[in-house]
Length: 209
Picture 1 (cartoon, rainbow, N blue to C red):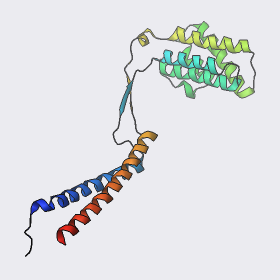
Picture 2 (picture 1 turned 180 degrees about the vertical axis):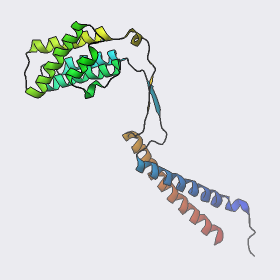
Picture 3 (picture 1 turned 180 degrees about the horizontal axis):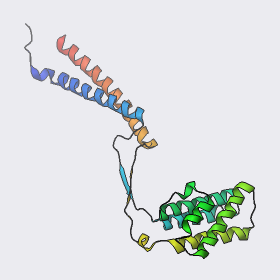
Picture 4 (picture 1 turned 90 degrees about the vertical axis):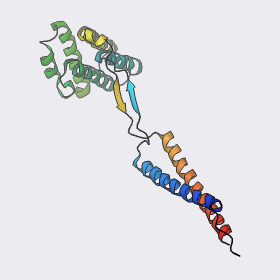
């Protein structure tokens, strides 16, 4: 006699087929995400945006701590880059791509003469250090650093003291930890799929023979 067909006997086989399909889908999806080096879920970070003068002062403090007494060319490059970035954000023109004379020309109608003279001297000294291999004395470096701080304090806008809008950044690149977790998930799903296939084959053989 042939045994009657009972759905409950095949329930495990049907569920195994469904799970194998789901696992294969996720394996393909994870492999694709692993290759494109993008996060599975894009995260949006909101960080407080510092006003230009505070960012510049933080960077000058770092330069004073880490670079004082080091290579003069590196010291003045960092110091003038900080000032140029501050000028760009504060006054709205691209000081990073301008010469010392062009920067002073743009600023002289906006600020008092004394602050411009000190800034001009600082930028000229930096040009000589970077391009003419001038080696200033330590007290000159300290004086120029103070000049940079004075210029920032004299030109900062009071409106900048208010809380600025937060800066929104979107994480586009996967971290090493996330990459490791994703790779581990692919391996686990692969072996789980193999186990389900073996279980499915054993059940079908048992039911049919």
